[in-house]
Image 1 (cartoon, rainbow, N blue to C red):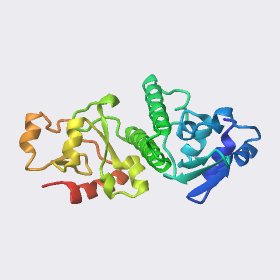
Image 2 (cartoon, rainbow, N blue to C red):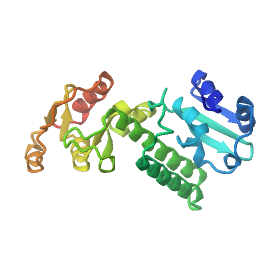
Image 3 (spheres, rainbow, N blue to C red):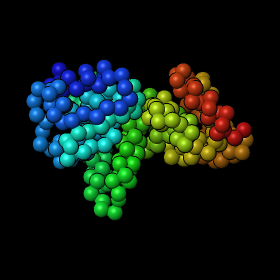
Image 4 (cartoon, rainbow, N blue to C red):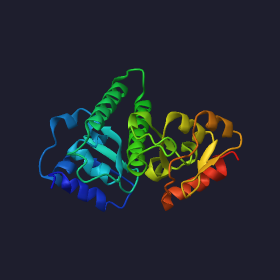
Length: 244
């Protein structure tokens, strides 16, 4: 068991959607002091590779703000739980490690950009973290493009089924609201030129049939039914986004 497990127990038992903790309160829960880097840097707070952050991330919480002067950090509930394998931390593929290193560097660039206000930095960091979490969750449910069969994740886009602009915060991070699609398929789906039945069968707009033929997108792969949570989002896509 991780020595940081008491933090996980605390966040899993929390019934509110936000909480502010001082570093001293966190250290009292753990029974030891936090590492020095936690007192001066913020990137670790939403980094699932850090053992401390893994506790609240797995419980569905993200950092809201951090105040080093008052030595406190605020969290908000993003989603009830992050569905991730128990051993993900120990067995992260090299590709995932590279992705995390790139994400850390992007966050550092945002934090150190003198042209951005504190509010702008917080908004950009929260948006980047949310995108990373959504992509991770969508990949766990939809590991390949349903139209091309491509599974190499560097060539896939995490596409919202119910458009991002129409979602609440929970829906925006829900992996069931995501499809992993090849870029040209993502464009078709996002614009409503294609959709899917709950059975997994492809639905094609009459306006796009010729284009799909030219791109050899015939839906030849064996359809796989969507789960009930995905079906809710797909019903919205067929009703509000798809162009018959």
